Image 1 (cartoon, helix red, strand yellow):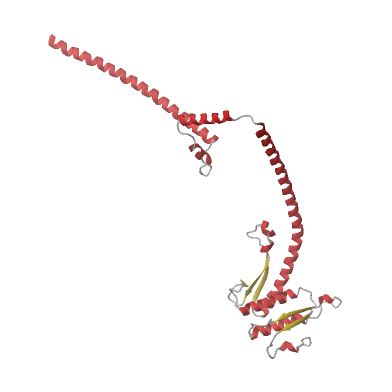
Image 2 (spheres, rainbow, N blue to C red; image 1 turned 45 degrees about the vertical axis):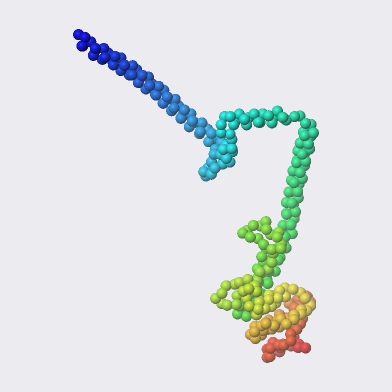
Length: 301
């Protein structure tokens, strides 16, 4: 009897211990379920708050670029103690502010000056717009007339260069770049651009000392002057050694052009201004056998 009683006691003790463990296990499971529910609820609240925060104060724009708010938030205190210290500092600054009538009066004066300056700037802006409108009313007709003159020079210059077996073009450069109409007022950038071509397979190039030879520049300059003189009224013209630096072929062609331009009859017999005027060519030598020398209006001194 004694032998059987001891195992029964041990079994009973283990059974009670197992029941206690099971009860503890159930309690832990219930606790875990409760914590899981709280955790899921906290996650849901966090998502809702994050969505609300992103809508009120987004960290990035629609393209994914960071906004200044992120850098500003990073500058804020990270711990509660630092936050409290910052608040105390701000409160101390507020408490240190004292009522000072002179400061308030100075503020009102500055405010009034700013308002007066703003009105003055508005008036200047209106005056500027009025001046710009007036300048446009003067510039547009003037520019159109100038373009018309340049186009006429371009036609004559191209014709004269073609007679020499070359090509030429004259254009007006008004300083406007990439269609920016605000740049037209930079009149220092305005100018007449001359482009020439002396070889058939080459393209038109700007007349410069770096591209064309001395003779090519001389021919281009003379033809340009001839084109200009077609549009200018003058009783006489005088040039000195205009034929220097030219080869024989170009010199003959240039001399022929000078004679042709300077011996034209008046376009209007009743208008003296329609006459081309006299032409004085000063040179130490002329080529022999110039056919245009036979013109009765040419005199050699």
